[in-house]
Length: 386
Image: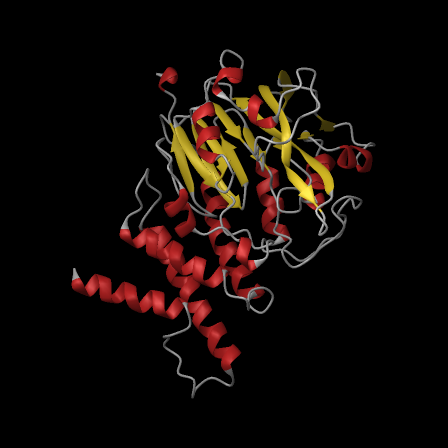
């Protein structure tokens, strides 16, 4: 037991740049030493995640340490851009495993397999249809104008290789986009769906203007929650309950109110009856008032009393972990399983990249949850299938 904890201490110290197998005397400079250590640490994390698979609730010691190593790397001010290639290679190794798994049949008894791609990007795979939410390649290093570009460039800066993302897109039948922020909306990804005549459901008027010539790109926005059926590229019908809301309040440096960004909260019923919800960055703080006919705030709408009898029973809820009223929102949705999202988004400034430690300290979630990372997946089995 003592040996295990000593090994862990060495790993964590290494992640913070205090230990490593390459001595400073061997390194040409501090950055080459740092790069060498980061490469070794990412390889260790890859191995740990493969050996100790996602599990419900409390993380085993080894998985927790792997998360803490990634937190240390992703919160170092030298990243990005110095370690861009190392992280990109790490992401490629992770997602190649996802693609290999997507080429295999789903195991018997599995209703839905939920893959994490990057940030809030998830792919929900069933035997009948494969549904994507908020797929992005990662634009933390810059990229095209997300509001005006069709994203035709073959290569732009991103943490996920474009060819790998294209292979993921090829496996999907429909894309839901919650809102127009670059860590949730990637114009290149949206254009590739549209070029393949695969439906894209989104919330934003600017996206609607840019993609007005694409029939498969549909803006879904009303003045209150509603149900609508969308048809995936393979002909499968998906009943979708949509809760319109906002990403958050926005103010300038002088404190002037700038408005809110439209965000759709999607609740999708899959063909076998399994229900998956995705919050995007819906972040009600109780002060904003949505422009709906009932004069209700986002917080009012995302409440037990309002949603009762309107929203289907949610089985899997993919939810941002930094929402101001996270516990209240989770209680209102009341899922069987919670999938925390928006951990360590590299497009954010370092201080606002949410860490596992912050989640463990701040969360009072009582619902079952799976804390897992990019390039991993969990299974949900709907007992109604049996």
